[in-house]
Image 1 (cartoon, rainbow, N blue to C red):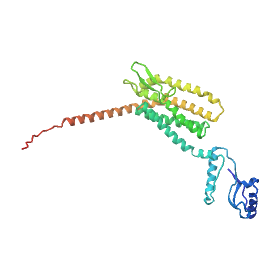
Image 2 (image 1 turned 60 degrees about the horizontal axis):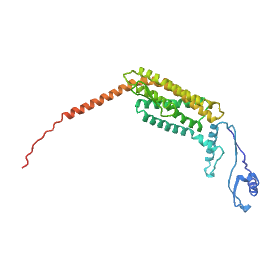
Image 3 (image 1 turned 90 degrees about the horizontal axis):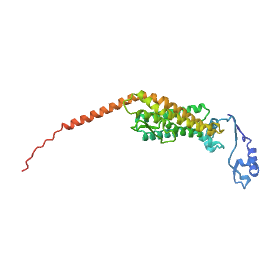
Length: 319
């Protein structure tokens, strides 16, 4: 990038005399770049402030805009006694892009925290909460990585769609599934069309009744939940497919985000989560049985210690 100056001349008194003459002729465009005091008296004219323009070349991307903005500010900061102020029409955009990464991380973290708290309210199971959190984070990371490969840059539109993707990813963490005692399953649709599908799978897995092995639980959960998850994702993809033909950057970014969330979410719900749950559930159950045994043993010891306490009454004669 090259920076060329437009008003740079070091002709001393000749240059200053020319500027003073310009100050007396407001019709001259150049005179608007200088502010003078004592304009009523030509001999006492004093320069208060001035401005000059610079030409920027090879600025083709938002990253270049952010870099050159920082460079110009650094040059101005080298002369603090002159109180130099830099300005350009695209400066608000550059400042926005300069903090977009920090804002994206902060907003995404808050959105994930809110989704985890909501999932805990509907499904108070530690195992579900753990894997739902991991699934949301991995889906979000996958969407961010694939969007970057799909020619989507980090900008405010990207930040908004990523926050939306967190809301969609919780859909692939679970529509709750419970056994109603009559041999069929009841689906509780709480959010949108499909609701929490990853939570659907995890809660359907851990809430299976009977002495079923992890493999049998996985098979049972897939038999009941696979088609609802596929149908819900396909209906959403078909609903947003028309956006792919609209020549608008914002609309295309939204379509790409929703499409990737649905695809990655279905992979998590139907492939990754069942495998992970079937592997980790035995260890969780062993830990739960250990805690139950420890609690029962402690209660039994407390009961024995209380039964061994005897009360002895000694009569006292008071004369």
